[in-house]
Each structure stands twice: as C-alpha cells, then as structure tokens.
Length: 78
Image (cartoon, rainbow, N blue to C red; front, side, top):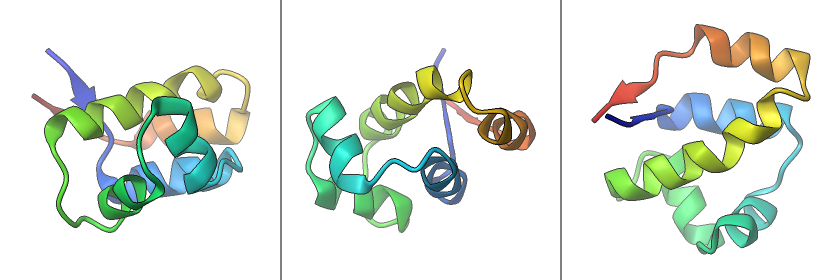
C-alpha cells in the first residue's frame, strides 16, 4: 500500500522546503509541467503522485516546520 500527499499539501511542503518545481522535477526525472499539473490538481497519475511524495519525504527530517506540517497532512492511500 502506498500513500501520497494531496496536491495542495504537496505544494505547501515543497515551498516550506524551498525546493523549486524545476529542481524537484530534475531530482525525480519528471518535467516541471508534470510537477505543476500535480500541484494544481490537473491531470496526473497515481504513479506520479507517489513518485513526487517519495521525492519530498527524505527532506522532511531536516526541517522542523516541514515535519510539523507533514504530520497534519492526511495522505491518500492507494
């Protein structure tokens, strides 16, 4: 079972971590447009959502504000 962040929570976490859409896209091998589409709730696949969530999770441990926000987010289960 996998869990992923809702688009609005994902965007907030990415901003708290100060990671741009471009940087995140490069890190996970996606395009900036794919990241943008996910954050804005436009067309995306569950696989994309999981990939993006997994790309942010390692950074959360190093940022107390991000950890606090992530703890109140309800991830979607698939």
